[in-house]
Length: 465
Image 1 (tube, one colour):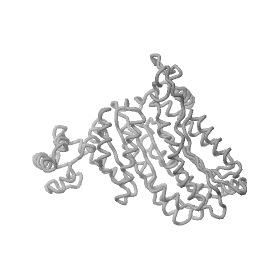
Image 2 (cartoon, one colour):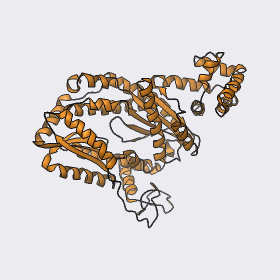
Image 3 (cartoon, helix red, strand yellow):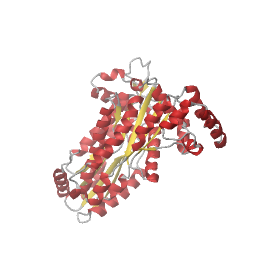
Image 4 (cartoon, one colour):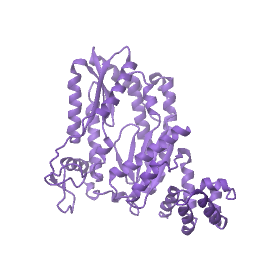
């Protein structure tokens, strides 16, 4: 169970307000496109370095007396009105320094101690505007040595320190972040120049997870103290759930990205990812439901929302050679589909997944997601999905191709061809029984013909045996 020192949070916020005096202003900030920054390079060592840069910025903010909360490149401060412009410039300058030019969206509004809720509402509106109006990433546009061989976006300025780099050149940012990452890994980074070390049979998994309905939760917090306590609770729930899920999955090799609060992203071997996903959903729901002692700080409505917290999860499996940013983009799209499923169907949590065999399959997976052909599943059904996939692996591969081929046909022909195959196959009949479906019921069969995602999941699990 998470433990939040409510008294300490309230004391810290009261001290910040007192230090700001009157008149005061609230400052809200948020790293723009943090995902793009962290995955600009596909080198795990650089990803670690980028994540560390965000952590260093968070630590820089937390040490300040003006800070209400900070984490994952975002936060809120309360400052004297006359010093607000200096604080804003200081935030932007320090973030640019640590991230080598990445933008930070910052907004400020007057702070009314007698109307904290109204001040927070106003700040949220201004922050939304600031995100869209944020200055673009800053770097030189002169490319005398070509583009960086790591991020392929910035001008190359330095020789890569990668072993056997064959005279590769990288940009200042990738060079510096690799060095930070190598320091964190204490010399172990020499073997982590690609995501291959996380792959199994050439495949790697990326998981993206994000809390459901948290916009409503944060809008229900009407004071700075409640915002500080609520933010800490969300962060602790997801950190604890991540640790528990990794332990359940056998502490696999992984590269976890700093995203902040309820936003989790991790690269890990595919077989471990299947176990991690289910354990993560269960742990988030369990930790949230067990929250206690925060009613006075949050209020009854906010506490109820917190205790009912769920999560949308996207799982994408693809060849490790696919750039990290594309892997994360695809997993993020699947995460969004899972969250939409929760919204439409009233599910607390949900999972959407896709598995591709080649780099070219990434575009096909993206197309299927855009066309809504994926079938997210409620979080509490993920274990059943894995059992069904394992059982599907018992159907001979030659017979499984009947289901695969069927999806290229129109609906009537698909039904006829598959049902004909089903009537002659004891393996298919056993699989439908495993799924709780009467294989003689044509309408039920039509709704449960395994789709390409389920067939790919069965092949993935089969490959582990």
